[in-house]
Length: 223
Length: 392
Image 1 (cartoon, one colour):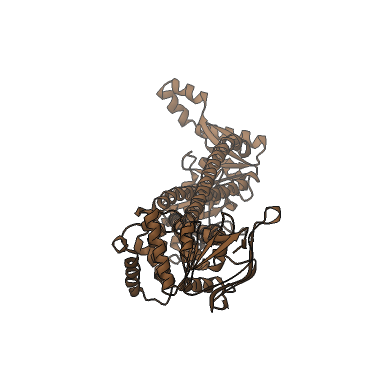
Image 2 (spheres, chains in turn orange, cyan):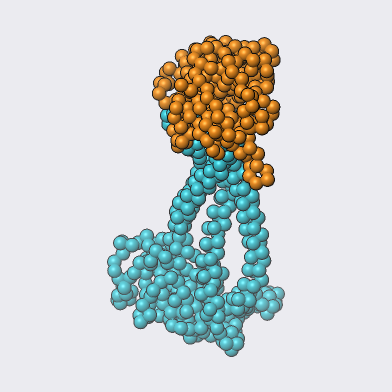
């Protein structure tokens, strides 16, 4: 069964003459254990599509089903809780809390999880950090890390709650070759463990290593 | 997400902006003090204005005494000549004037302070038209009314015995104040200035002299002359008064209509007051605007960071609570200092108690509103999907 189903979703930004249709009647099914790359030129609607998959952006029309349920039709607090347990997000600019330590950054989703006792936070954060090789950086401020290290912190944050879906928007966009390889390796490992991993990328080499490639142009799927 | 976590997050937010909070706190407190004092001053000026109005509507003319050339010339003749002049002074006309003018509905009034009279620390005797000016409801059918200061409430017998006659003895009311031309001794000042005091409301100068002998003095410092006010006198009355004063004291009495006297004085003081008030109000408004702008920008700076929290599970409502708590704490220092100042002043002016409540409410409402405006930015950012977190 598909973990994420997009049914004829559309999204328009702006209004009147300035309206831009970012996503135009897209339907797509994504299953657990898959690694999916979304590629396309800038402005083709990749990030908007990913945002709608991750329930960060409601579609103007169409439905987004997660686990077979219309996940978007919830109140904000409920939607936040659902997102927290379901999705791990990775951003091109890392989106870390620069003034906070690596520990606090990785722990962030656990703070809002609700069903994980506080005393478990340390062990979970430590496990995620060890997996990404940043266990010795837990007390360091995120802003003092290199780009590669910051992206590893972001990855650790995306998997600390054992979320079944990882959505990554240009995760290698700001990284050198070595760090890019590390990030891709971790994402593919997560997929191999049964998680659904969706990656928006311009990098065709990264896309080529995913199970499936979805191409977008002018808000539509083209392949 | 526990309350403890929220508190920790807010504490961290506050710690980061502590410098600004203290700076604006102190500046805003200064501005708030200025506003509070201006409000108090305005209330005092209003009281003073009301007191002055009492005199103006009766056509009051104030009296100032000064030396005359004749007296100076006398002085130049030598000690002997001067002593002879003093000895020859005639108080009969002045006392006769007092007898005629200082009566019920008379054309003059005065208040005389008699220290140690009738066993009290001080007796204030309101004569002539002045008997009706203080905030005291005297029995107009009685020739004289007595009341004691509020500190003696419950300690004095119900009446006062003088020369074998008994008079009812009252206690002045809490709003008892004494008006003077251009000045008002309000209830708080009366309570502070007059303890173990007797207030005598006796229009008739003659009767007052019979009851309190010391009043018979024509001394310019201790008699009725010192604070005498003429009410709508005719030119003949003024001329007669001047002559009587000159004969009795050797001094020239300048009689000036109160409204004329106030024009020059009040015009310059009003301009000064206006300048000070305008400056204080503008400075306070500018500081308040700076505080609000600084609070808003402190909140908006956090939008990127809070968006990250939102993406990873923090509901917008919770984030508003965090922003509102931060905004309230940001305002807490100036608010607390201002309320403390008001509390101090409230012991003097009771209406400030209400002002304190209004201020606390207004500050809380302003903080919540600013937080709401900044939160709307967060909500807008949250609608940008994966671009939400830019600038975290």
